[in-house]
Image (cartoon, rainbow, N blue to C red; front, side):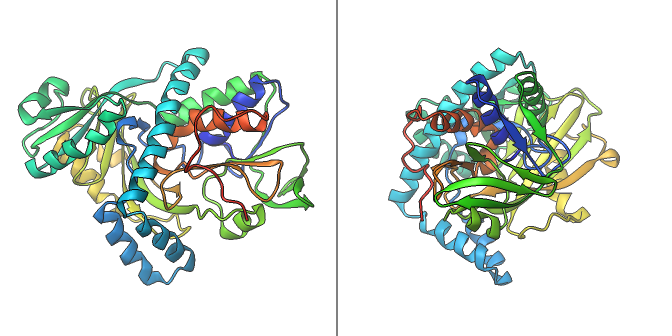
Length: 395
């Protein structure tokens, strides 16, 4: 269930094991929702939990909407601001991201996908923020992730296209990567089809039919599907469906905005993240993909022109004259986030229903590892990494 990065990678590993696999999704195309219009940055060195002040302020503003589900999400999230909880979540997240990057490299080599590039610059506009970021990155450096500090004078050496006049410096992660996540997902889906995987698209899941402690069949808009085992790799799910599937985990949509802009100048060599503005930029062929925003707007995916102004401001300041704004393609996208900002795996109420959910803002960074973990569990084997802090809580 789900034809995004989580679902397609899981399908691939299960098909490689010899299983007969069917993939269901409500969208008309593979990777058409959260896996589609992101920057494709695999920010492995930035696997921090979301506990920053800006997220807290956003939650407090959003709480005015009296959304019970959001209030529950927010209370659980704010609880994680304690030091012990933060460290446990960081350890779990870093463990999965490290494993997933290894699995992704092996998968990319196996299918021959050519779109990956290395190098991400995390940009800071004042010296104090740069100092704080460098101190914070020590936790990732201690866990084996490569992060280098760059003062402003060094930035042009890494990225000649960058206007550094407003910057104090950056952190450079040479082994963080970027690619077109939708193109990768669709290439992998094509390889899945060659292994016999069937994709049933425009086929929304309406309910499940349980039988005691197992799932008997899934009811979709186009009919019923029956199998021996089921994997929920859905992104944003409404509360009713989550409750029917038998899980506690609140996966809430965190809304961001995406613009794809034709390049008028040579593309930057590296991906860029404007940390002060929360805006990410990455070249994708002859286009620049720009994303940003973290809003708690419920399940609404509408957008207004002003939603993209912060994105365009960052581009104008960092890469002046680089893109054609008149031909921008824009959309709102929803990241399926848990309060801990970590995904969840395992079984819940039903013994033949496995979960691979909540990959959120690091879906591309986690997808390969998450797919492998899920496939191993479906096959009855011990997960390849410790899932402490990453398991479904049962009713």
